Length: 102
Figure 1: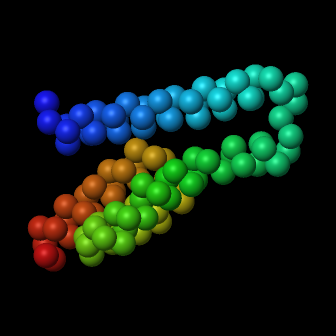
Figure 2: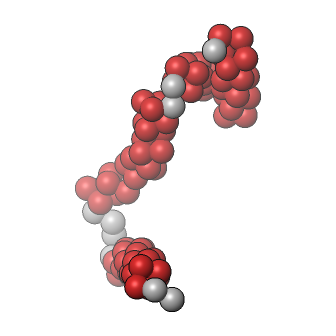
């Protein structure tokens, strides 16, 4: 095995250990608290929105017209209807735009 592959293995192991340490550390911290402070609870409640934004924003910006338009359509549908209907309408929108417009 050459040095480049060995460095990649070290990097993967280090990233796995860092991920495990942060998750385990957060679990230990939360279990030691008798009561979760309001600021910590607010921060924990904001995590899902932050993660969703980091997944959706790059696709919206760099995914092209079809992806951005379908996301806007899905967002509008999602304000009124269920998640399954939103996903279905978003999928139909992106397929229609790809086959009819582009």
